[in-house]
Length: 405
Image (cartoon, rainbow, N blue to C red; front, side):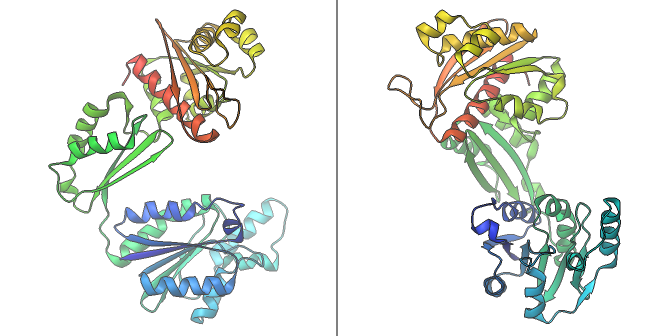
């Protein structure tokens, strides 16, 4: 079964808003055994949307449209489908009642234009919106399914389970079985070589390897669960990748929080070029207060001296971006918060500020525990990529340094 995805909204094609709905839908539909074959992104133009739907119907069995179900003049998905297929519009009463209740709670009344959000085709399968107002719906056209969903990501995300249940029931789909793990701070080619060793005796397994800012994600999938020996795969992955492997956690920072909580270890963070990104990633995880005692963004030399106790002579002799400064930042923050481990980052994220001796992308790291670990890395990329790779690196090094699993 083939699927085409259509994301609508002029804000998407103009670049004002990043389009992520097609990406999200692809992930979840792939897990049902459906093959997503094409992505469209279309502005708020009825003719272009019509052309996109017609083209998609020529190549796919299922079309999923996200966006264009709101109350305003530029929300055109229902009207376009109505004209194309001669649909009869009806008010979805449960959604209308939910809307009325919502507006009453904030002291507002329902406007005629608001009813557009709860208008669906007669005899359509309706997907209730538990986090918003506009429901999704599915219709049959020419023996194919056309599904329309809200474009607000949190609403679409909350609705995806109902959509996959609908598709699995209609098409008797067999869910794809998969195992996913991530490997930090290894080249994609190195990870690929390791994956080859892991699956060389396993038949019928699809491999997907993607790399982004120091993080490689591996997805091994099959339609036959018996062909996917998960325990054996993860056992071999642990042998090959060690502390750089992330499995059973959604992210590197979640692994840090869970593992350090389990062992009763605490950390404190001193950041310069990453501007608090390490602390932000840690505190994104519920329960992080068990692990993170505090953090300091010491961007200027004065802040490094006054807040972290870095020796002014160290800064004069070696500079702010140096292993020596990273060492004193790590020990300073460890002592200030009385943490088990102190970690530090100082570097040049760019796009300017580099020199011949210290180019853009040079980042120095420190970890203070029973002893002191320091190193420096040269990263390539833009400012965001350098900062992300730097945070991935220090969190990975902290796991290795602490020897925790």
